[in-house]
Image 1 (cartoon, rainbow, N blue to C red):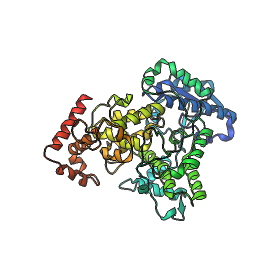
Image 2: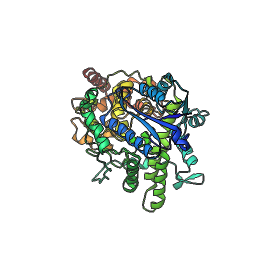
Image 3: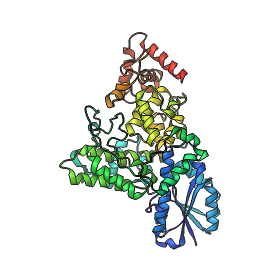
Image 4: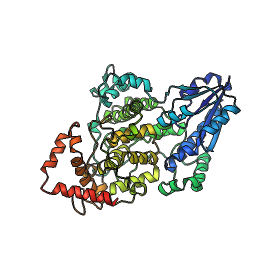
Length: 507
């Protein structure tokens, strides 16, 4: 019997479950990897994401061959199914094994394929929690609180624990992780890699490929400095642990002009491809803390661990739990089309200009830039959650369906009506002015709510609260904020709403 293993493009780890089921009989196993142009043209994905995924796949195929696996690799195929069918026949595959796809649309596509051999879906081991384990944790709970899940994860994997208690006596140091960027701040520099021959071949092809002409209008292809192998991803992890982790906590929410990464780890693209496993990441951070706890603040290490084994795992678990119609949720019935400046960066709002321009350049923005500027604007301006999610999915180098649905539809846009978050993450220009230096060089005034210089974040914020007051008053912690609508001067709210309406009509 010939066993076939299809390794998907976000499962690039020899320890992945499907390969492990037959690791002791490599000579009887045929491995398949496929690049699908059809799949990569479903959205106008960032060019650097295409380079990262294809180069990482090609490097991983070589790694498997060096380790004794027999690998068939299809470059730039039209689709997945035709190469799959061809390979099954040529290799006389009797049983196909695939590690469970993380993204639901691909899982449905896989199930619908008419294959000439049986297929075994192997449970996915790329996360700390398997889908079934999260479902068992969630089932008895009336409300799924990330903090409860995070604490359970800390106990389960014994991370930053002293017996049954958290190291330092507190589970969460979030209040110490919100320092605004005041004064001169020296930030660490991220590690960069130069493209090798495999990577450069992909870059050169994408420069002229007619299928990607639209992509080239939106995104910059070079310089490309991302790692493409497990070894390089491990170098990024080591550099973060040594040079960035100790200072990560205080300024993890801060934003500065020209500072694309601050203290952020830049590990999400590698975690989401399978080049790193979350357990090795959090254990490395924990070990570094124990070795340096006399000098390091626990808040920095805990804040990072919470992002990886708290928020990332929670988002994956919720994604697997919600109904199939979750991507279409639109609790506020927002239908405003996505403005063109999301693709060009050409807007007088400096915060949006800076972050979108940065994203066009490297395919990355950190979590506060995404949540409190990009998604916040989309929410209060009334942009379509579906168009916004598709933009996020296309723009970011670490974006996949499982990541974007929960983060954009749920967390950023509150389009699920509170399944994931307790209240909308809506904010005026005051938040951006406090946590960044963007407002200092902006055409608009961060303090004006009406008038020619009024920041759109201000009039949209109050317009959002007014338009949805009835729905919002039932959400946690919103009543006090909504009461401020009644304290406005006569006619000011009407002027705010008129200005918001005029902006939407002109965009």
